[in-house]
Image 1 (spheres, rainbow, N blue to C red):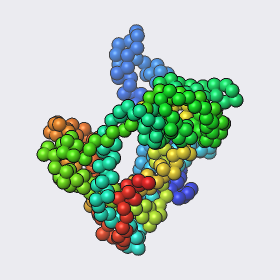
Image 2 (cartoon, rainbow, N blue to C red):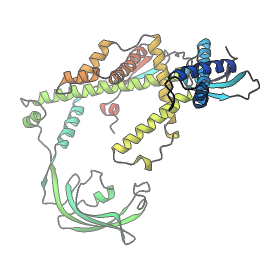
Image 3 (cartoon, rainbow, N blue to C red):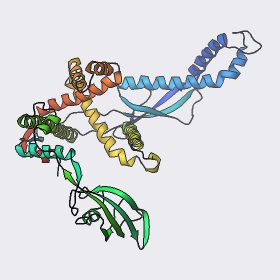
Image 4 (cartoon, helix red, strand yellow):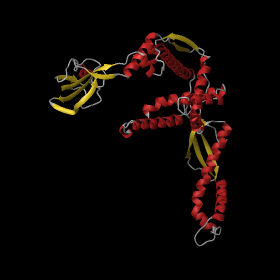
Length: 433
């Protein structure tokens, strides 16, 4: 071992490395001699270039390569001797030379933390308990009916939920503002696509009516030029259409895949769909609580290298998402600070999960991988092709294995924690207000 290791922080370490100049010179000379045997230079036959010229052409580069290799080897040997797991890459710094026989360097690096999984037995995990009732089925069917709504012309004043066609012009302090005027615009009153005060002002208007009214833009309105200001709108109503929902009958059931049109079967199918959604959401809720509990009971530090690496990955993902939505990522200030907390959470959790998988043999089995892929493939027209597509890529298989590892950890943890049943409604579970 070259020197005593220094603890610079929770995970940061440093030790010194010394390299014999005499050994470096010997290795450099050997490498130059090998180069001389194969080097080509105009005016000389291959392998006949004078050694002095070889030294002039390659000497500095070879010496640098030999020094770098020697430092890397010394570092690797010391790490192996100290039985340390290095996170990321070491930083080598030359130390002042006080001996003509040696080069001296300091190596600063981070190590992976020692992970001791905490006790989960005192952790209370809420398990949502949901019973699907007729009201939930009715509400779901109403949503489906609204998704299939049709509109028909109505010879009456406009009211909530009607679709209307209008011309409008808005002015602030007497001047029409950018985007404040349009013709033949369709909107559904109460749909929330326009400001609430604008939409409700259209109620009771008839075809051919003109109306003037004021609307105050919210302080946090996305259009900064009009935020917090009062606009006067002139509106002409040109068309009123009322919503016509499909009847709850055999035709409606048939359109949803119930071939014989049996409403009872339709309701049973909806109930099964809702119960599947409930199962998925309950599992998600349990998983979220388990992961947080693991972090709460297992106190570890995360290597800065890994955190910074994850921050960069999150920034790139965010940029890609913005660009996919037609937005320019360059116009948005995505600073590392915005992602640091999330990155640290992910790295710590990843280290904990890796340790659990290792010590409790929770690795994904071939059977589990096959089952997940086959289940997912059933959603496509050609399941066998989808299965082959997954198995053709090591990266895609790794993604499946990662999902299974998390599920295996959740199953393991559920046997350790205290499960507390909590009765909730379907809407509460799904976050529907």
